Structures are given as structure tokens and as C-alpha cells.
Length: 402
Image 1 (cartoon, rainbow, N blue to C red):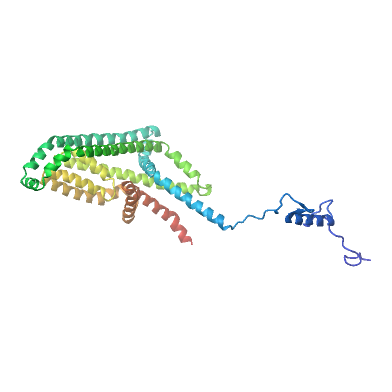
Image 2: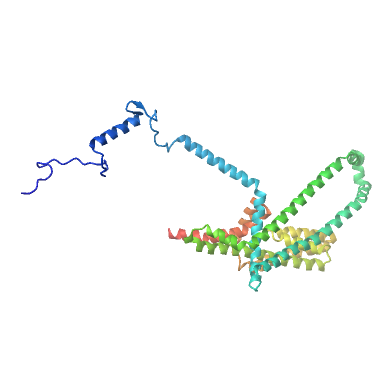
């Protein structure tokens, strides 16, 4: 005889244990029913007719889609973003100084590495390069400050003669007889208004000069620190990138730094050439303050698009003060030199360091100048080169694969 199957003369025993099929000793069917009833009564706030520890019942699940919490979170996010923007705006001048210092450090790094390849330590190479920068500023001060002091002193000494000439001029005399201009000027001077305005103006000029000197000193110190720790800064920045992408990011970052350094070095070389050629030309024509004008032309030549024009206008104006012939010769010289610089010197200097289309150069300089003035114009071109590199190496290949 075959054994009877369940349901054929035998009853299937009730499973014991928990409802999830796991056997728990000491818990039978009656205990499970009593436990479920107690849970239900506790959920309703009563246990055996007595008030439980939670008289109003157990708390429900969190309201994940609560509109109040959603609005509060959004408002806090907007407030945080607004505070962050205000903090950046308040520290805008300091951020500009930091960016300029880092930019200069990257630009001076190729010269430091060139000296390192000549078996010099990095500390000695930084000392030589930074000493050269300080020497340039010292020479610039010695070339510019004495002429300005001399001109200011001469103007103050000859001011009474200028006033006497104005009084003797027929046109000025007739206007003074009609409107008593000179009498009003004398009353204004005697009343103390001129002294007050001059004192306030002198204080304003002094504060501007002190602020400019402090900013220049800060940039020099930060540039020195950035130049000394540039390699560690790069390595620390690369550590924030996931290891699987670190090699590619390192290659792209090093290339961007090399392009920025090449642009700064090339721009300095072009400005140096402009200053030397201008000094030789002005010295041949015996234009006064030839060295100061040459340094001014070299400094303004660093500014993209308009810097060379500013330097040429100032130098040509001083030439016209000497004589008309000298002024015309200066205008012709600067027009010819700008063509040579734009179509022969700049392509040869930048061809191995920065390859930026002319349209990108103009757009980068204009946008940078509109955002940060002269500093933005200086930073715009290398940043445009960096964006073009990222687009060429990252964005376009990814678009081709889609």
C-alpha cells in the first residue's frame, strides 16, 4: 500500500513559527493571534483598556512630499546662493589679486624650468627670475618718477608767469572786464575753497597711490609663493580627480598651464622688443625722456588690442611737443612697427606656444576686458586657448561618438 497523501485521510498539521515561515520556539498559533491583536490595539492607542505610552498613537511615516519642507529647502538654497554671491562680490578685489598672481606665476614658470634644465635648483632659478622682475620695476620707477617730479616742480614754479600771461592776453582781459572772472578766482582762492579741494584731492591721490603700491606688493608676494609651490598645487588639484581619469586630466592640465605660460612669456618678449626698438628710435630723434617713454610703450604693449595704440599716442604726443617733424616721424614709426609686430614678430613668437584663431583672440580680449578691465583683457586670450583645447580634446570627440 502506498502512503496516503495529504488530504487523503490525513490532516495537514498547522505550521508553527512566525508568519514569514521561520520557526520560533514557544510561539504557537494562539500566541501569534494574541500578538497581532496587541499590536493592533497599541496602534489604536490602548493596551488592555489602559492608556499606552503613546496616547495619540504611533507616529506615521515622514511626509517626504511635504510642500512646506520643499518650499523651505528651496528658500534656504536661494538664500545660501545669494550669500555666496555677496561674499564673492565683497572679496572681488582679493580674488582678482590672487588670480593675477597665479597667472603671473604660471607665466614665469617656463623661465624657471629653463634655468632648472641648466642644472640649477628650483630655489636658485626662482630667485634669479624674481630678482629680474623686481629689477624691472626698480628701473621703471627710476625712469618715470624723476621726469614726473621735474615736470611738476617746473609747472608749480612757472604758474605765476602763466597767470600773468593770461591777464595780459587781450581776449582774457575782455572776458574778465565783462564777467570779472579773475576777481571771482581770487575770492575763491582767498576764501579757502581751493585749499580745501586741493587738500581733499591730494588725500584722494595719496590713497590711490598707497592702494596701488599695496596691491603691487601683494601681487609680488603671492606670485613668489605660487611660483615656489606651483608643482605641489598642481599635484594637490589632480588628487581631487578620480584615479581612472587622473592621467588624462593631468595631461590636459599640464598642456593648459604650458599654453598660459607660453602666452605670458611670449607677450613679455614682444613687449621687450617693442620697448627696446622704441628707445633706440626716440634716442636717435633726441626726444626727451626716451627711456621713460620706451618703458611706458613696453608696459602698454602687454594690453591686447588697444595697448600698443595707447603707447604710440603718448610717445607721438611727446614727439609733437618737441617739433612737428619729430611728431610725424614718431607716428610713421609706430604705424610701420605695429604692422611688423602683428604680421611677423607675434606669429613667430606664439606659433609654438599658443595657437588661437584671431576671432577667439578678439572675443576673449573683449569679454575679459568687459568683465575685469585690463586684467580681464590680459587673461582672456590664454583662457580662450584653454577652452579651445578642452573643446578639441574632450567635447568634439564625445560628440563624434554619439
